Image (cartoon, rainbow, N blue to C red):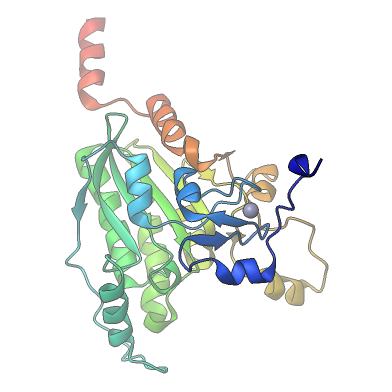
Length: 292
Ligand SMILES: [Zn+2]
């Protein structure tokens, strides 16, 4: 009964060669070849193994915010190459090249928007821009997003994806950690919630500053999280690392992450959490009024 013979789902190397480029993509985690349109419909989550592909800042804004509510801020803040850094290419040229290639001007996009009608100050990092590294511009935009949350008395949501501090800006990158951390304590004093979302990967300077300071920390499944890379740690402590070390699941198990949320449920979970933690000023007023 040849008609019912199960087809081998693995493609041969010749078949792979015949596939037009750009239509299909290989899953980084399980190696499955997936039709891009299908992957897009599935929010760039592998239907076979649930691996969450990296997506752009635009994509997160689209799936998390209410339609047409995003207003971008601080686009005019750009880096000036204070260290005159040069490796193969001048740093300022590198920045220009990335800005021209991508539709963003830095590794974070910040602004105001609404999630299920709740106003938020939001920042979304973009790994495509020099590995989502944090230089003075990323730090300043995040700082202003925090200040905007305080000024408007609204919650803060930051979605992180980063390889860490930007080496081309040296100490100026590192001081962004202290700056954003200090401002987050002001947000805390103002009694406003901050939800930090960790995506694959969130590491080093960003992880060690604002990404790990959320009132609620949410992570996408199987994301690489941590400060130094596993090899560096292994060499430093001279010990084998436990399996799954530095994954979202490991962090959840050890109490660092509050919840692991698949991309499809991110918007709903953030909205639900904000409803627990935040009450807009006018609602508070009317409640007081009711009590009198
Ligand atoms: Zn997969």
